[in-house]
Length: 342
Ligand code: TXA
Ligand code: MG
Image (tube, rainbow, N blue to C red):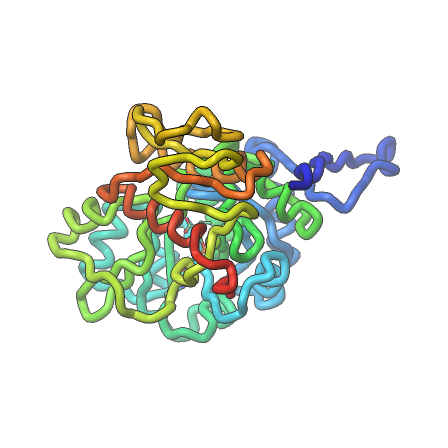
């Protein structure tokens, strides 16, 4: 397993111009706003922190800018992107809201819920964002992203900031290690608090369909909606739905009750799988068995275990309730046969 590329902060200014490299500049949220705005305005992509995972953002109204997202990620063109907005007013200019969508937006925005809604005509969104669909995925992110969009005055298209098919990045360092040679700026907001991508819900004929489990548990959404989420069906609308996705370099073995020598172990809770002492590396998603904490740690720990060089990451069983649904979904995709990577 090769070491991660060393990340060099770009040092600018006349005295150090000889050190300028083609690696992304990393700026803390407190000092990044003007630079991020200038790049986005110029049609470039910028990696930004959101409460879920880091996003690779571009002006959603600028086709060239959006194309740069697909280029940097190596993403299949048919995968539509989430448009991130600053507030409900901006969202309503882009998509049609009915009472149920408004209720969910008011309950969960800003936050890790993405709503797939009918698009309004002439909404300014470049068709590359939606891959030509007549629906659009929208959400309001918490923190720096929300402020950035408000300042820009235009929505930002942003997939997770990782090469297509790889684990989503939850730190600026992970973004820079993966995409640092392809983008100009990573805004560093520290580790993302939720650690899993947003939950995606499609609203069709007043009914709700769960397209991707994520940072808000399905049960919480059902409680607000007063109705059950439909699951399955709907085809491959979210590529998070491609069988192999979120793949680390090592292969992944689920529901491990016994560890073979040479394996790395992704543990959960207090009880260890048999033979755990032989694991070449071990990370515990949550000693106390807390699924929210586990979600936060999932991608970073998978990356850490991948870096251990083990050929296989064995994963202890994780309960299916609450955020466990999203965690198990990501793990199942990480474990899927690699020839299914789109
Ligand atoms: O938390 C998140 O959702 C992060 C942060 C950056 O916001 N974003 C993210 O984006 O995970 P991405 O591109 O990795 O996943 C977006 C998902 C994809 O699975 C895509 O297929 C689905 O949203 N999607 C986008 N537009 C859609 C649409 N109109 N209908 C159905 N699915 C859609
Ligand atoms: Mg993604």
